[in-house]
Image (cartoon, rainbow, N blue to C red; front, side):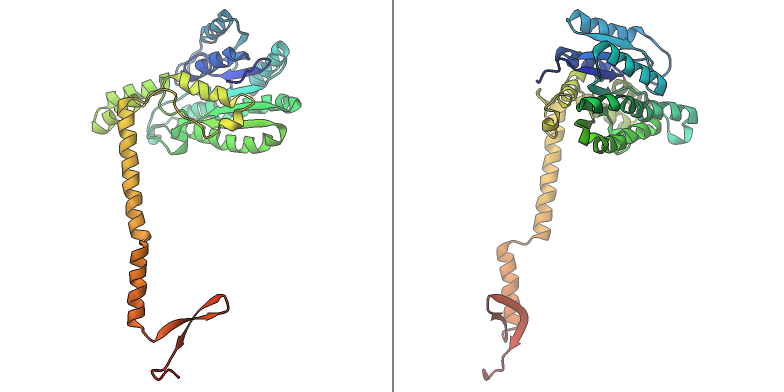
Length: 327
């Protein structure tokens, strides 16, 4: 993979899961990394500065450069200070990975308005703040890479995730707008939807589904487990999008490791269903050539006195009628 030597990256939510794996991968590629993490619980409460510090220790132990940040991404002034410190310490900001965010599970009729504001803001407002503060520095350098983490919850919806889905949906929309706003400055903005990954959020969803009971919930938990991928797989894709070749890797997202057996079976069954559906559609909508000829022959047999008329090299749709005498 291309080198990021001389580049500076800010990774939010980098203390655990996908964020941690991404920070470590970018550091292995030569980037100086600002490891931003409040060390909160999954629902965004509490603080633990040692979480970010531990990742910085891992990077420095491997010979890399890193700095810890406990800035809350929902606090614009704090994000401004974090970006300014990155510029002062490492010389600029070239890469931003927006991974920070919290979640909570509750049906919409029980969702507390304050919880909704806190969770959705951790994604939507947090992503805006980091892009807004980093973009001027990237534009001045004429180069930048921004990667935002989104989720199926924000794209198609998942039961009981109103606050999380609202935040992730906003991030997806913001990605589309930022990509257009910044393209002329040599800055790419992409979104990554990781699917089922071995993180606190996904593993927590599996446990909640099991605790809920019922056939549907148990089946949902089984599907999530069958599709689990390590955070390092997602980090490789994110890192690829952060390189100078980033635009060229779009739509080339394949796994380098075999899928779990259950996932392979599910994918195979889904492809078979799609193929059968396409075959039925083809049979219904597009008659074969012999069938079309048979229809035309029957039509000619029913109307023997009608024929087509050619005029030059153009064919007229108007029929010509001849009398029985041939006049």
